Length: 199
Picture 1: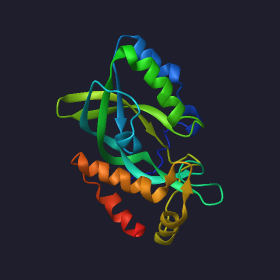
Picture 2: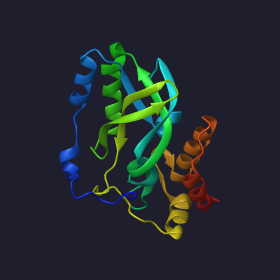
Picture 3: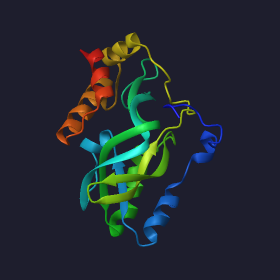
Picture 4: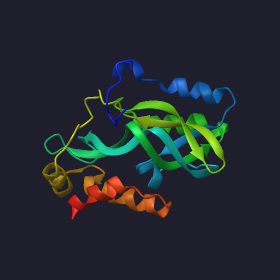
């Protein structure tokens, strides 16, 4: 399946939403919480992890194709943030949170990532140098109204030049993510190509 080709067997966007209680139940069963970071969680996790490793997931890819009307833009000049979209693969970092701290971390993470229920949280299989783990990740189906679809070069240039929200510009957000990926030894060629429009 090509990236963002909708599978007719995929449930509607609304049916895929999961509550924070669903994920807390996993930790209540005595399991540590693994979290997959692929964008701002790389450079601003806001929680303490017992360990972290570079990781790769299949079936999803990182893309700057999610509208942001508050954090990195405004309703008048929407910005963009990253999402995990269907198709391809993605390198990022997994963090392990001890079961004793998982409830608190999940509550804070939910407040940060899910205030408007835009993302679809999912358990993803992640390959690490120390073996596979199943980690929580915040994904975006192509049926979401927050998915931008294809954007032309001129629109990216305009967004990088003008979009700014309460946490800063889309341009700085994308650059910071790219630089942090490089620090982890992760090369994202698609993002590097996109950032040419930010010059």
